[in-house]
Image (cartoon, rainbow, N blue to C red; front, top):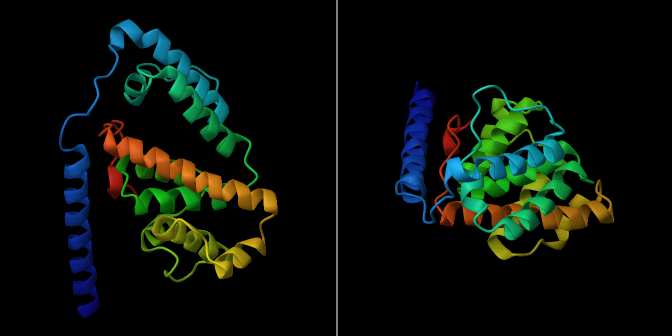
Length: 220
């Protein structure tokens, strides 16, 4: 009974923390004006289809009635910049040296540490489609100290935590990563964490709204 009560209290605390964070980020309108959806819809559709094709390999037309995600109408105010941002994200996901699981563990831990509702929710959905369990996702919110991670997974999560806290990876953690990752993968890992930290920063700072089917930081 005590354990049940403790779990309930922890859940209530987490729910309040998420609500407070999302009120800070999403409780007010976005800080920039989006492009007009009617005027720039075809332009945004081209970008959306290109990103779908190059990241997920999906070049089929969107489902009937599907709307272009609103993020495009914000970010395409600076199309050259958005092109550079998405090009690196495509490189890090489509042509990755890292395994899918290593990559998503790193992105998810980054998104959670940055308390980034947009990044977190979208990558949870992506990870769940590829075999991550609800328990996996919940443990990511705890981090490297959670039980049941393999030594390698613990090193991935720990390295993200060290980068987030100190902009550096310790020698011990680097050696743990290097037991399974090549030098090319280690290089990619550091760039990956930096890229998705930057993505979390601009999504949060601009107060970009979530997609309609997203539950933000509560997504599991």
